[in-house]
Image (cartoon, rainbow over all chains, first blue to last red):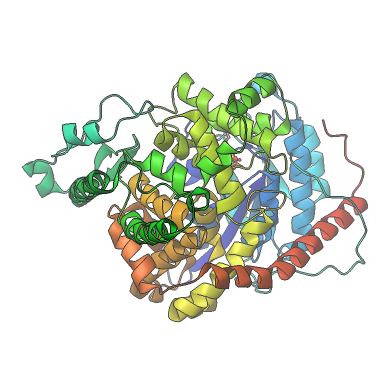
Length: 200
Length: 404
Ligand SMILES: Nc1nc2c(ncn2[C@@H]2O[C@H](COP(=O)(O)OP(=O)(O)OP(=O)(O)O)[C@@H](O)[C@H]2O)c(=O)[nH]1
Ligand SMILES: [Mg+2]
């Protein structure tokens, strides 16, 4: 594979989503090919790296697997800052986690890198009997918001490599511009409101 | 070497009844394969033969320390280290002499605690020096039992989250994999979530409470240790709301790193590596997810005695110990690998604590308090800004389907 025209690309990727949606499990499956029934809850975030070869380039993902509990959301900007890609994960058996995923998408659209590649992962697709979010519903939402969507299962490995591959293919071939300045201030005047509540 | 003897020293209900210590034989020594063994607190550790040897030596040192504590007990009386109640004594020369001996005791105690509290004395000493005993003494004897009875069967967002996390707390640990272990952990966490509804339950506390249970022998004592930790030892609001206390600590930490380890700080900054990326978990789990459990306990020995500034000492030491290697990195992944490898292999607590207290230099609690005060407004402004921004996004949003 190695030829002089082969590009090596480092890409920061962040996983966001509700508590227990399966972010860590997806990463574990992708990076180590494993699945455990009881995955330790993530505190702060965990880091992994994995290299993928796609047609014209070798992509080295630097993956940040973040914590899902709502109070941890205030830490998220540190992890998605400068990210070239994001996987927003929800649990197909949990409607609230889908609502949470939408909030993350909105936040990334406003605050993330301008050309960030975003994937929506409807995880736990193996749990057919307890499904609460239909694939159609998620697909429509993804299309409207310019992200690509796959249903995944960290347990059976369905679509796990595929979703990361797809991201690798879609990454701009030039290094994405980094966004070193932490918080991006908003342009709109602030609206007074009570605390924003997402995934409880 | 320490099979039976170590068991004699450490006896508590939550411990797996039999600990098998792995004795490397000549073949594995040669092959240098990865070995699995159980540590003093029942955690399965993976390491190489060198790690096992280090752990052997450490436990020998622990036994020697134990002898020092026993000798002092024989000399000064069994409870010499308990907080002296000077104020309640009669006046006169007797008081002055007592104060003097209390002072001498506290100097001895400080030194001894740095060298590690023998595991068997740990519950008693922690309970006393942390202030948990005092906290408990201000409420009726039945407080904990009443609390647990009163909250039984109640369902709140906190209890839901706790139930979700119970099987995800140290999975594979022989006690936390049992019904009994999970039930005890649940009662402590649920009980606390009702005691302080601002904290409720924050992920991370599950690991902290779990270790407290393993050390303290009884659920009730673990509960009071958790209470004193959150209410007195650590900075306020570490675990509430938007973790503002934790944000403050991170900023203070970054400042300290630039002062105490300027080369590392400059190098990482040039790489655009924010040290909070890794340090946040250290501070929220009090190192319980990063260091071997016996080393974590040694850090907590000092934490309960000296207060939250100990976390800075230890975090700075982890960077300091890896200075040369860190300065050669050019990728974020390498920085993280170095730090992770180093923390996972810190089987000799003295290696860490020597750097933390002798090489980092002293930091008084007062200066740290000042630093925190300085950082607070910026943190609050930043968090507030984020909140408002998110709210404004929400207003722009199409109305969502109602949340349950
Ligand atoms: N059946 C099934 N279970 C899954 C799947 N993915 C994850 N799980 C389970 O769901 C639970 C939560 O998974 P995690 O990967 O820890 O979820 P997370 O999003 O990282 O959670 P936080 O770290 O708390 O934010 C675990 O017990 C997993 O075993 C899946 O695809 N199928
Ligand atoms: Mg996780």
